[in-house]
Image: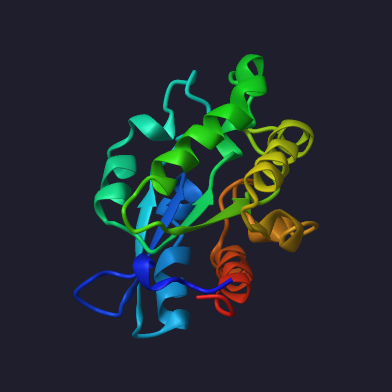
Length: 198
């Protein structure tokens, strides 16, 4: 897969990458270090929104956050979506069957942009023991299978950050959010997937 000319900004050859996600994207540095690794021909913007979900029927759906609007105004050439951690909670479980359809609606908003961006889906990292409501069983049995389903149905590439961080509890200070080592693995996994294609 190669980036088409129509996916680049008209005034420069800079490739614009939008990182979509929750607090794991917003607050732990992977978009910034990804930009450094990719080099001067890329600009990577962080559009994470802490506590946000794919599910529309939650207290904080990503589509209702200012970051969602800003990410589309950015007119990206590439969109990297890593959402799903906050959908893996008992409070959202009753609506989990709509995850794939809600995810497709989010994706469609990026597919309709005039830049015709490449879209990459990313499985979120595992959830380890924590003092909150995040549940790795829900993530592994409900959320991630639906991300795989959407990837297959829409023929979109999938980056498996979840697998890259399996059996790495020491990389998560509170069981959910990565420390520096965990963030580095996220960056490297995404970089290795996209660097050969864009």
